[in-house]
Length: 178
Length: 197
Ligand code: HEM
Image 1 (tube, each protein chain N blue to C red):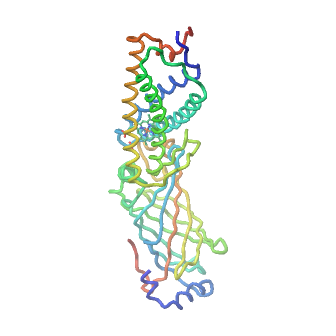
Image 2 (cartoon, rainbow over the protein chains, first blue to last red):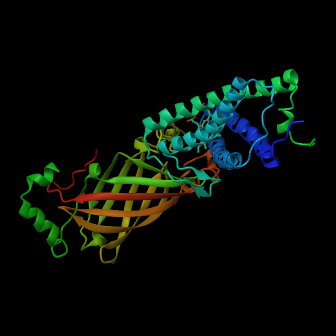
Image 3 (cartoon, rainbow over the protein chains, first blue to last red):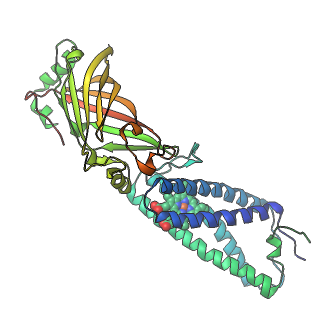
C-alpha cells in the first residue's frame, strides 16, 4: 500500500482543518451581529484562533519543507499530479495570507491584536480607515477562495477514495498504519 | 494663530519670559489647540478615544493657584472612540445617553501647588447626571504667549453608569478609564469670553 503521511503532518492537517472551519464559520457569524459585549468577545476569540492558526501554518510549512510527503499514486496522470501540487501550495499560501490579512486589517482599523489578551502583536500598518476597509474585502475574498479550494480538495479526496480507490485519503487519516 | 500674530513680537516674548515674575492671569482655553482624550482596555487591548468639542472657563494665575477657577463643558456627542459603530453605540442609553445628558462637566474646587510647575487640581466631575470628586496632577508649561496645562487622571466607568446592562460586565470593557488633557491656556484681553469650537 501507499506510504502514509508522518504523524505530525496528519495531526497538523486535521487540527488545522478543524480550526480553519471553526474560525471561518465564526468570522461569517460574528460579522453580522449587532454590537454587544458578546460580539467583542467573539471578535477577540476569532483573532486569537486566527493568530494560532497562522503559527500552526508556519510550523506546518516548515515541516513540509523538511519532510517528503508520500508520493502520489503512479497511476495518476501527470497533469492531475501537477494540479494536486498547485492546489496544495495554494492552500498553504492561503493559510498564511488569511490570518496575515486579518492582522493587518485589525491594525488598520485601529485595534492592536493582543494574542489571548496577553501578547500584543506589532501594528505593521497605522490606523487608516480606508485601508482597513480594503483589507476587510481582501480578508473576505481570500476566505471565499479558501472555501472554493477546500471544496475542490474534499472532492478530490472523495474521488481518490471511492473512484480511484488508491489509498490517498487513507494516507492522511489518523489511526491504523498498514 | 491670528490672535498671536496681531500682537507685537516683543510683547509675545515679554509675556513668555516674564511669566513667573509678573502675575499673568490665563483666562481662556483655545479649544481648537487643546486635546481631551481617554483610553481604556478592551479584552486586554488598549483603546484610545477623544472628545472633539468642549468649552472651558478659566481664571488661572500660576502665582495664585488658590484663587484659580476652572470649569469645562464637554459635548458628549463629539466623542470619537475610533469607529462610527462605536460612536453610535456610545451615544446610546446604556453608555452616555447623550440625548438626556448631552454635556459632561468638570468644575474645579481647589487647585493646590505641588512645587515647581506642578499643581493638583481637585474638582467635581459630572457625567450622565452622576457627580464624583476627581483629582488630577497638572503641569504648567509656558508656550508662546500662552501656556500648556497637561495632566491625566483615572475614573471608574461604573461610578458614572457608563456602560449599563450587558456592558456593565467589566471583563470585556475594563472599568478604569484614563482621561488625558492637554489644554492651551491663553491670556485674552476681552476677559470672561467663553471660547469653544
Ligand atoms: C486562518 C484564520 C482566519 C480565518 C479562516 C478567518 C476567516 C474570516 C471570515 C470568513 C470572516 C468574515 C468575513 C466578512 O464577513 O467580512 C472574517 C472576518 C474577520 N476576521 Fe478573520 N479569519 C482568520 C484570521 C483572522 C485574524 C488572525 C484576524 C486578526 C488578527 C482576523 C480578523 C477578522 C476581523 C476583524 C473580521 C471582521 C471584519 C468585520 O466584520 O469588520 N481574522 N474572518
